[in-house]
Length: 213
Ligand SMILES: CC(C)(COP(=O)(O)OP(=O)(O)OC[C@H]1O[C@@H](n2cnc3c(N)ncnc32)[C@H](O)[C@@H]1OP(=O)(O)O)[C@@H](O)C(=O)NCCC(=O)NCCS
Figure 1: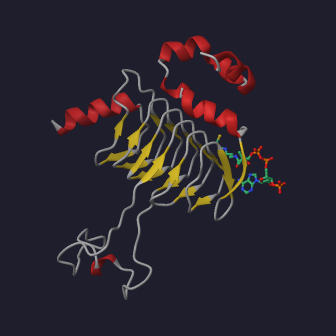
Figure 2: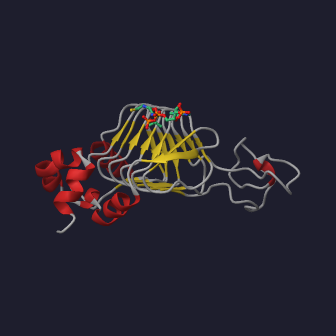
Figure 3: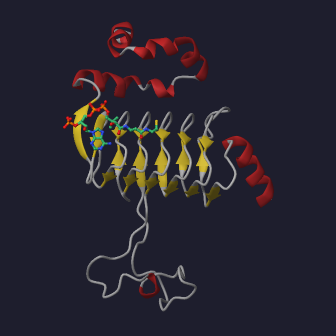
């Protein structure tokens, strides 16, 4: 049964060799054509991946819900896991975790929450080698610059760069962002997007066309 599910996921996700898909990682099953692509040497554990989203090679992503139409560049790490940085005498998991990271543990139960949960919206572009920490929310349409380390939530349509990542600007004006957040083009049917894709080439024309619909 396990093998059947794995083969089915393989076909569905169209993922490249050496990619490891673990835990409850699933593509968006709301669609017959998820068009999700996972590059070489990716490590995906316990994630939900929206339709049309693709991960380039060497991406590590754990405990993450990522929306539709996201572009994740190579070397990106999302939701890394945590060790205690205060109170506990040692950072080593043998003293707080049952997961036996080094093959053994002193712990009779879990004393520290090791994994957070990260949420990434739709149409998010994450640049090469960016790191997105645990428990972060990245809004729809945001861009994370190459090499950024995201330690705080990033609002919709913000462009954030640097270490730690700071918002340097927004892709669109506030009223345009509100429009897009309400319109949710990413939830349109595949055929609608095929027919109308050129309308997504200019934000002003797009809003002019659909503002009164
Ligand atoms: C974030 C990004 C999209 C910004 O592009 P942009 O909107 O055209 O912005 P600009 O190039 O005008 O840069 C704006 C400022 O941010 C700085 N900046 C841009 N990208 C940066 C980055 N990744 N890290 C740190 N600073 C960055 C620029 O130096 C500039 O600073 P200044 O105003 O002091 O001169 C782009 O630089 C980036 O990082 N793209 C990711 C590329 C990538 O990973 N591609 C791989 C897969 S497709």
